[in-house]
Every structure is written in C-alpha cells, then in structure tokens.
Image: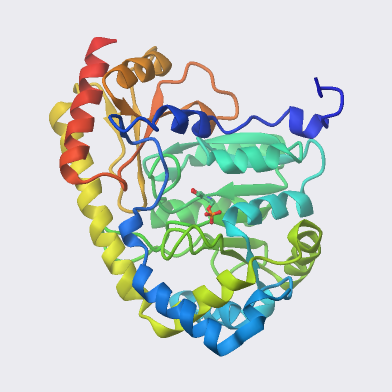
Length: 393
Ligand SMILES: Cc1ncc(COP(=O)(O)O)c(C=O)c1O
C-alpha cells in the first residue's frame, strides 16, 4: 500500500532474517543455537545496581539531561587509558567517540564515507548487521574469502587490484559468523597488501576481549603504523548490551565528521547509560569480570565442539573457536541448509542458516551456531538432535 512512498534505500535493504528465525525459536521446547545474545549470567547485575544508586546520588539531574555528542569524558578517558595500556596506542579523548552500540558506529561510518556504488571490501561471510547498515548507503560489496588463518591473501590481492575498494571492513577476532581469528602472520600479510592502497581499514572488535584459548591477544592489523585505521569497540559483550554503548577510535579528522553525522542521528548516546557504565568501570575490576565470562564461554564452546566431534557425521566441517560466541558449520557441497533447518525445527533445535551473512547467497551449505546461551547438557542434547537432522536429510 505504501510502496510508492518508501525510499529506494529502504526497499533495497533486506530485513533481518535472524529476527524471523528468532520468532520460530520462541517455542520453549526448541533448543536454540540461533541467537547471538551474551549469556545473561555474565551481566554484573549487583555491581550495576550499586552504580545506579551511586550515580543518582552523585550527579542528580545530570544523568537525565541532554549531553554532548562525543560522549561522557570520563568514559572516553577510560577507553583511552585501556587502549594505551593494551596496545600503547598514541591517542587522546579526541580520538574517541561514544556510539549507541557498535551497530550505530557502522551506520555512522556508512553515512560519512559511502557514496552510491562505492566498492567496500568485506569478508565472505560477513556480519549481517554490517551488510544491512552499508546496504542503506548503496555500497557495492566486494566479498573476500576467509580461510582457517584469516583473510585469503590471494583473493585479497585480486580484489584490491580489480576493485580498488574505498573501505575494508574486517572482524579479525572471533569473527561473526564464523568464530575464526586471523593469525598474527595473516594480519601482517593483510597489512603488507593494504599499506600502499588508498583504503581505510575498519576493524570491528566486539569479541576481542573474549579470548579463552591460547593466552595473549594478537595486535590489530597495522596497529600504530597507519592513520587510515578505524577501530570499533563495544561494551555489549563484556558488560551489558542493553545500555547500547560502543565506541569508535580513529583519527581526529574522522571523529569530527562522525560527530556531525551522529548529531543528525541522535544528538548523543543515552547519557544515563554512559554515567552507569563509566561508574561501573571505575569502581570494579573489568579484567576480573571478563575472566569470568571467558571461563563460562570456554566451557560452553568446548561442550559444543566435543559434541560435534562425537555426533556429527565425519564429512561435516566446523570451526574451533578460540574466543567469542560462535562456531560455523559447513555441510558437504550440494547440501540444502534450509531443508536441514526445517528438519531441525521438527526435532526442536534451531540455528541460523548461512544465507544472511553472504552478499549473494547462492547454494548455501553453511550455518552458524551460538554456544553462549545453553548449559553443557543442553548443548549436548541440541547437537545430538542436529546430528540426527543431518543424517535424515
Ligand atoms: C561483528 C559485530 N559488530 C557489531 C555488533 C553490534 O554490537 P553492539 O551494537 O551491541 O555493540 C555485533 C553484534 O552482535 C557484531 O557481532
């Protein structure tokens, strides 16, 4: 009825496939590996309650008032200190802007950088929220293959040569949807390839803190070597997603432009949430809290991998995540993952078919599993059901 009124921009943007799937999984008998939610037991509820009372006492009306677009200075300072300590990054608060989750950061980057038809290099598969956000700005996506080590260097070389992309969007740590992490060597190679190109590199890192295997975090690509780097961080997976708080770290000139775009979008991110998270961060030990989350996710990830080893037919491949929230399953070529989805729902287990993570979903034989929302026993039961479904299609 309203077709003629809607913009071409919105008409060409796919609605989130996952939301449709989540409707199916509302049924409580279904074991769902479909969501992407952090485990609610990882939220520091008691500490946040204390912070809530403290900020109400300490700041009064300020926590309910309009505020500045770039975000609360104390929160930006916390981010600066953390990145200085972690990576010796040479930044000040002018390099940081607070966003309404990383999702808004993606939208703002789209607004600031993308003209109709601009070539944007993305991983294949990529984060569906990015595909949706940049689709609004009529990006021309250049999907680039992933392999076990990270980005496929040959494919990267070819795509850089052929398409001269303006931006590259990568998730080097515990990627969504695959759970893959770029090795140190792969990161160096990626940097070698892009260092002389005219592109800006966006590294989206909501899961980087959640490495539960192999100790040390691996530095970002081109860290401290180029100004053409934009980092996206988020408090969603390490404190709480409901406050919708993330941040962008970039060159000051870029931050200024993003600030203008953000003014037009929402004036500023929720200030109550910013006071709350800031107070929480200054009065608690974030690293200790993150250790708890990692311990929990490691147990859950191990339970899933162990069950897949035990129950899946041997021709099914899957990633072994070292952090983050997902594993990615590849069925034999020619398998129909949508048929498997219907069968799995019959058997009361759900997952996300690979489709929404591809720019051009064609003959999709992959699927994403989330392990952070079920206990070990439930994970085993769910994987058994999935294995039976695989055997029956
Ligand atoms: C790769 C990636 N980027 C960004 C986001 C958005 O996170 P938020 O807006 O909660 O910070 C997500 C959420 O799942 C994600 O997986």
